[in-house]
Image (cartoon, rainbow, N blue to C red; front, top):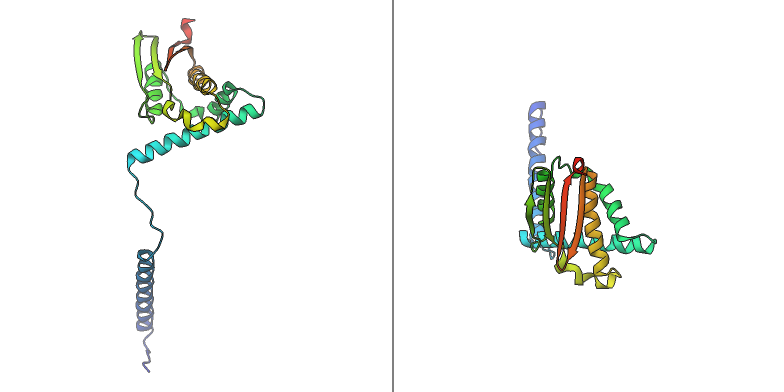
Amino acid sequence: MITINNKKMKNNTTTYLLLVFLCFTIALDAQEKQDSRIELPEKSLEYKVNRGLGNTMSWFYSGIAYAKSKGDTPEDFASYGLNAWKSWWDGKDIPAYLRKFYICFSIDKDFKMEILNETENSAEVRVTIFGKSWMSTFEESGVTDDEYIRFIGAMFSSMAEYLGFNYNQKFEQDWIYFTVSEMSLQ
């Protein structure tokens, strides 16, 4: 048996043994992870973005369905949803609002936004219906296409009004046409 009389040497030996034990434990843990039956897949950015769109659409449709079950409308849910995250919409002027609008809804690869006309205080815009390619996925939710489109329109309108803009819209086929202008132009 080895006896260590020097206190400093005892501390160094203890530290050394702890480090060896720690390295051994880490090596065992790494070996166990390599032998695991569960392997987590790597996902592409496209997959993640599409999944994010699907999750967003699920939230929209389940919220509309829940509002309907309580006797509320899709527009009521749009107003409620906006209140939950409206502080994120900080567009101080119409160009900033439209840029943020575009960035937010571009998660949908099929989303298109066109500026049809603009002045210093207003813009006429058309956008495709956000998430249109996912709409048929949620047929069993009890939410009609018309209710979803009304929800989207109410959400766009609520965002603009929250920021202090006038907002008017109309739906034509697969497009939402809207005009956003500064309040002072009423």
